[in-house]
Image 1 (spheres, rainbow, N blue to C red):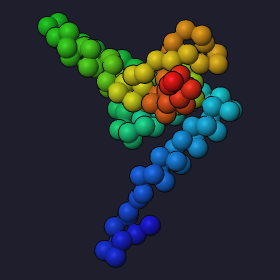
Image 2: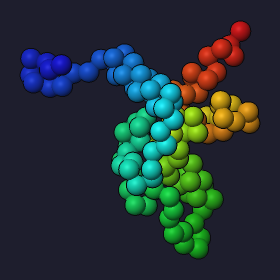
Image 3: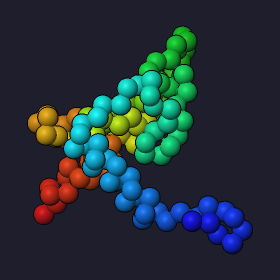
Length: 120
């Protein structure tokens, strides 16, 4: 939808519903996205670069905080439920899935879906 100024206006609820629908469809077909096919995080759309796809050469003296941030926030990770590729921030939750009783890394939307019945 466009505003009177020609600016794209999106409805967050519609976008969330569309993303949730896409993830539900992916879960039902269990499509594991190949690493090379992901150019950006499915959750926040942050682009992946060569340095944050899978590995990064660290130099002596790199702080542990920097290493932690690089590994857990900026690298790409697969959601073990839907197979999508997300940044560490968008895939920081862990939950049991249909294929694993032990908690595994899942994206935010899958986490909500997988744990929605856990709330009493």
